[in-house]
Image (tube, rainbow, N blue to C red; front, side, top):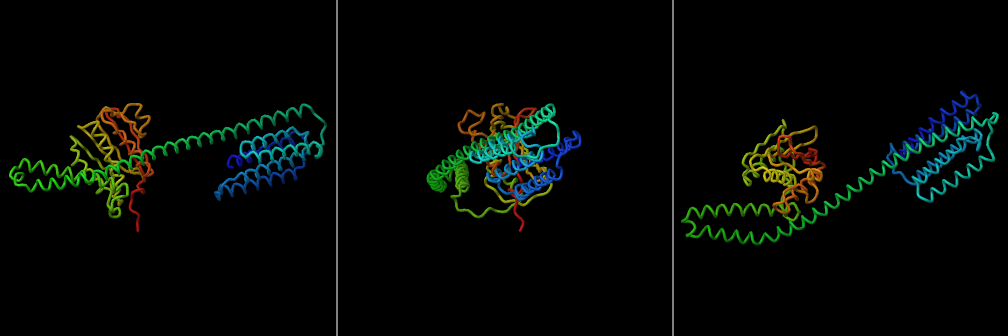
Length: 409
């Protein structure tokens, strides 16, 4: 409808220019009051459609488009009736209405428009208000060529915009299909992870009982080395239990309190401390460039997303990992840098797609970046990657702060 409204404005301007040239330039008398009234009616109709569909944001229907084209056919018929009827070379503008209806309307409406335009053209051949001029073949040919150029330009403008809209629609549909496929993979992985977490619960509980019994055995308590090993095993067992609990919590199957309010600085400091404690990076730098702390809701998915990026950076470059935190307007930007070999060009082209990874020594590790991309998308943000000029890789996550900020009471 927006394209049709724009074409109508072009038609109004074209009619004004044509009437002025014919009446004042070629000295051909035209019924200006009646033709001006038709133009005013067309302008009012266009303003009504503009108000209804653009400003009131009403849905465009086939019936609405049909009525708009019908009004255009009526206006053109009246203008042609007032200016010579079928002898007017601009009678071929009826073809423009038929083409537009074929592009915009269902088949039934298109045939109705085609029949109406044909009947109007036939009627104009028999009844019209003749112009008070002598027949002039050269003048007729000039008008015919003008009509041809005008029709061609309008069709090119309109059809180019239509094709562009169709391409954008196809691109959006392709993105939606890709996103649906990715979400299906996420659901499958979630079901697999949840099932594995349930299955691991029993053996972990059994191991916890056995380790507790061993720690109380006199043979163990008298040997500090064994006691230290058991303590380390207990810590790792607690970590496994925590991972299982987080999996179930993310799946909504664990009983937990409501999301806890915290601050951005506290959330990031706790996350980094826990990650460093369990991963022991060789050299890790954290830079926070945000001046003022912000109240947020502790988000498990956000925590797992950041840890996934840090894990990938650590695996690529165990000696040096850096994380930066900054704010750009209302966006939170998290950047993780490493000194590894960087991403292959193919990986950068398909970054975040399912099972795209340059780490082939262990299966399934490419899932991490895939999940990072989808968690960022769920926060209405994006994840991107590039290779650094001085070596290594850089992964940037950005999303609106409003997606994690604590709502004011």
